[in-house]
Length: 553
Image (cartoon, rainbow, N blue to C red; front, side, top):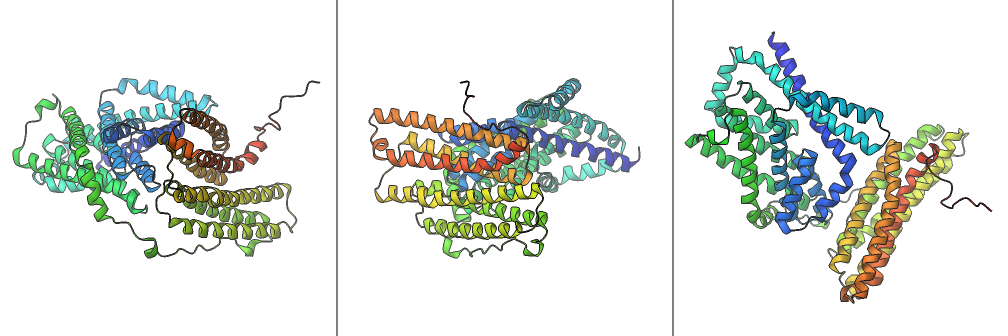
């Protein structure tokens, strides 16, 4: 076979592997995303419990990076400490290694069954979760298929005249092999795919074990680089999570590389075949990392705090956001409404930035940020006025019925976003200041409920903005269901609150009014967010006109 065809087949198989891994992760996020996020945020048992939660989540998502980015996001909003986020990410690395161990087994006979079942569930079912199950099963089938394709594509390489020279050089220069694969792993954004590629090449005899081990260690180091890169724009506390993980992985990977280079240990105990030795070495590396990292996490957290100090608010340049309302198209209603939609989206993103630190203020942290929230609230009010006047001017044109309806919907959602801003400042911020002045604290159970509700609303805020942009019916239905879930969560929180009151919990008694008003405000914010889904579902006939039973009299 021509060398170009060999490379083409290999590249196609590798990209299928990358896409399949992403497909499984996407299916898991869409089917169980909210539950997985809640599980990570609520994980107990200290650092060991967080590590276990991270391992389970990475096994399901087939991505330690996804867990790392999620943990960093929770740290940025105060829902997790840096130490807890780092423990979750270290555990996630072990979960990713478990995924590699399972996929490295000879499951090629199951490929037709996975593809058939996945296609059937995805194409034939109308239920969103079942369709995502189909996506997951189909993705697993594609992973196994891509591994088979990689094995077939590398067969001609065994007879290559150039390959032995390249492999021989990498065996003699493990540092180059380490760095090369670390960079490739970062570029691929998937350590699972990179390690599986090395395993298949070792299985086919293309890559001898002496050259594969430094590459495997490089892949483990490169896995730490991915999360560091993806969180580079987050606040300093959030970036400490992937940085701490990179420091731990880097030290262990370099140490293991030196040991392998100097001692050339016998890896026969790890398996009879080279590919399984590589898989078991990968699993052992990440298991050792967890064992060594957990007691070191407090020290690593302090070190990351020195390397990434908090930037004082006064030192941060004040951002001035330019309006995207385009008055040059005001006589072309469809373009003008698209411009208004972009401005409402920008308004929503500013609202999300405003809502995130509310949990810190309720916890009594950084009361100086209250002034920043009031400033943002004033900016949102000004933005709302501009949008309202802009759409009113558009409505002076002759509008098609669809455009007239859309202008009303956009105005309503802009009004609701301003109402949310008012709730944050006039209700939640006022409650936080009252709690701080009176020196009160929520009970542990009550505070856990408030944090859980805040996280849920924050997730729904991002979902609402996605629905605004995409107008996707499935996403709108998911957002609409969140209203009922939020109602149930409020009821459950109230029941637990009343039980604590009956038990005369002193913190609950002292903060009862504050707790109930906070929960009510969060529920009201969520209800206002859900309104963006109403017109999309109403157009499809998916909303009842009334919740009342028909009058049979």
